[in-house]
Image (cartoon, rainbow, N blue to C red; front, side):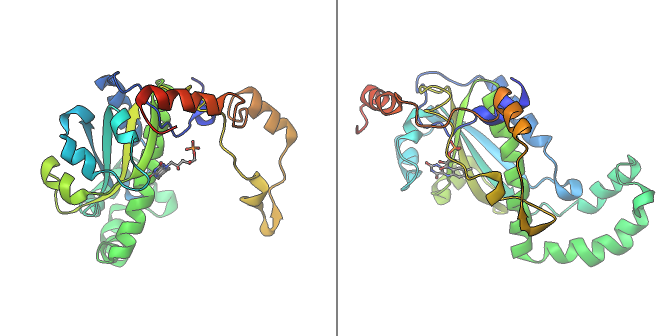
Length: 261
Ligand SMILES: Cc1cc2nc3c(=O)[nH]c(=O)nc-3n(C[C@H](O)[C@H](O)[C@H](O)COP(=O)(O)O)c2cc1C
């Protein structure tokens, strides 16, 4: 799929073909996409563990239920548990110097190994590593960027996916052998959509002018209708929900799975 169409087709999928496993190769593509995501310091902020739903006993699956994560856990065949490794700053000094060696961080911009060792590390990075709020803030941003790549890679491969609140870490942690330095972030459910991939149409979003500005906050972004039209042609902007048959689609899927209608 073209990039614009992947972005436009992505929806949070909540009805999965519970019987159809996800190929391991497709998970690898998602992981590779996540690993290619940009990240400050070239550090490894995130960790993720993929688990087959059916390898978790009923008690563990029940522990993961929370007010916003319920039947999805029964329908999605694949779970990806995402974490921040709070130790990510360790090794950042060496990784930055690696980028200097690669000329990715060029001298023209003030970079050198000495700059990393004598200024950046002692003045910036080491202090950050001792400030838990800063560590979590940066870790959450970078993990989110990686997850976004994984989501789009899933959609590109015909998979459905939805992010969910990750609770019950106390149950999951010993089971999956999670180290103490890993902070749970989100649980990603993955599978083949049982609903149409369009899932009833594109979700309501506010116009660009409410979120983006040009020059200053006094000047909301003024959309170029030609670009809007191009993005509609290319599938980034799609028909808004709900499709006329969406309520019926949800009703029939709920009936099939024995869920409340
Ligand atoms: C980081 C993140 C966490 C989310 N957590 C939940 C959740 O706990 N339960 C849920 O049902 N949906 C969750 N969602 C899905 C959103 O509710 C969903 O994105 C929203 O309804 C917009 O729809 P769309 O993703 O189809 O565009 C989450 C989405 C993101 C990106």
